[in-house]
Length: 329
Image (cartoon, rainbow, N blue to C red):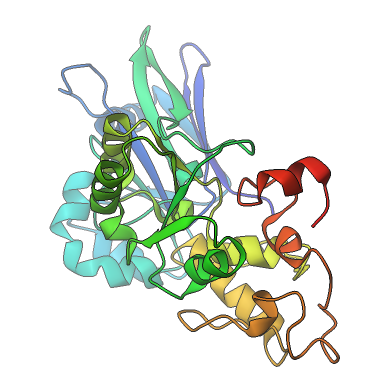
């Protein structure tokens, strides 16, 4: 699937800013000056009106505010809706309408909005430079490299669910602690870092849903330099794309879901439905994921050796070090 893009072009200089829209929500941190007197949102909106900035977009686009957001969300043709934080904050009771709409929401604000979420790859920052702007993806969160060594794992999933259940089965050598949800991860990191000040910690959370938490997590990580985040979008994406499941997806229809995690939940459930390795979100994993020789192996076409390696990937830091070095299970 070709991802839609939107590009802002300064007519006088030809300089441009281009954003890939990889999910339902994209968040741009931007302001014209260091003092924040003029937001990037206000600048491009006014300059487009007077012709100083033009837009190239793969989809129709519209600037929305509290006066027209209701009408815009009700339109049938998919559009890119650009909103500022004032509009998002004053319409927080409309989050469900945002989620269910056919449109792609681009938030341009001074802080990341807390009532919608964006994937890590959908977070941008914009800064003024020489009369125009430069943009880059936010990259202050430190992700674990394949050779990262650690003794403690924090999972977003609750006990005995998803990645927590999988790791407790395959990596009993690790201390595995559940945060019981995305919103509790910062507090759990603070608590666990104090419990294990001399041990490295790996955090497994859905980077597809990090927008609300990003700035808090960056701050927490700076205070806990022994913490790294596992580099994956979500548990369901890892399973679906693994050698074990072998799901193929062009991501067609991914933008119809409010988050990429929900897309992969749906794709994985549909792909495995009716099989011994059927996956159901928020339910315990099938025994097929948890043992080399599960009870279903005779009738299961996913019977294999090296199953955990096939699930997480041969270059994953979730594997034991000796497994990576020997390239066997």
